[in-house]
Image 1 (cartoon, rainbow, N blue to C red):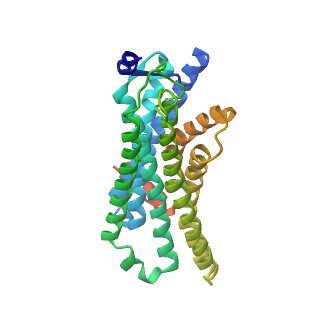
Image 2 (spheres, one colour):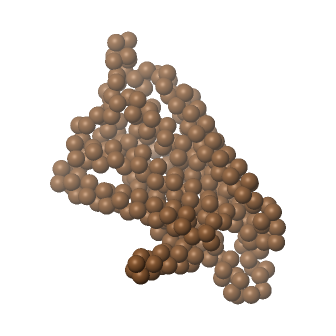
Image 3 (cartoon, rainbow, N blue to C red):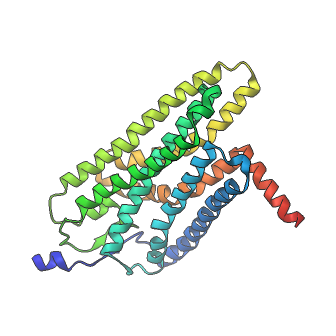
Length: 310
C-alpha cells in the first residue's frame, strides 16, 4: 500500500465520456469560445489602456476582472481541449495541484473584485460629491491588491491541506479539470477537514460577499429612486446593470456548485454547471460590459474608425 501511495505521479482527466465524433465537435466549439474569451477580454484591456477617459476607478477594476477571466480560462480550457482530442492524455501530479491552486485563487479573487466593484458603484451613486475623495487611486490600488492577495492566500490554505494527502486509488479524476472536490475523492485518507474547509471557504467568499453586494444595491436602488430626473435615473441604472448581470452569472453558478446540497444525482449537472462557470462566464463578461456600456462602445467605435481611416 505504501508503494502505491508514493508512486502516483500523474492523473487521467475523464472529462466528457462521449462519442469521438461528438468530442471532436465539442473541441471545435470550445476552441471557438476560448478564442472569443481571449479576444473579448483582450479588447476590453486594450480599450481601457488606449482611452484616457476610461482611466477611472470603475474601469480600473474592470481591467482586473478581464485579467482574471483570461487567467481563469487559460488555466482549465487548454487541458480540457487536449483531453477532448486524446482522452488518455495524463496530467502530472504537480500540474494537477497547480491547476487546482490557480482555479481557486482566480475564483476567490473574482468574488472579491465583484464586491469591490459594487462598492465603487455604491459610492458613485450614493455619495457622488465625495466620490473622488473616497475612491482615490490609492484606495483603488489597495483594494485590488487586497483582493488578489486574499484570493491567493485562501487558495494556498486549500493546497497546503491537499498536498499531504495520500493518493492510493485509481488516478482517474471524474472531471474535465483538477477540481478540488473531484481530486479529494481519490485520496485514501480522511478528507473531512478538506471538505469542511472548501465549504467554509465557499461561504466566506460567496455567501458573505454576495450578501454585501445585495445590501449595497439596496442602498443604490433607494438612492436612484430619489433622483428627480428620469434621465439621471436611466444613467444610474445603466452604470449598474452590467455589473449586476456579471454578479448574477458568477454567484448563481458558484453558490449552487459549492454551497448547495451535494446529492449524488446532481454531480453530473454540477459538472456541466462548472463548465459554464469556467468557459462561458469569462466569455460573456466582456460582451456584457461591451454591449451595455456606452463608453466602452463609443471607444471601440472610435478605435475602429481610426483604423478604417488609416
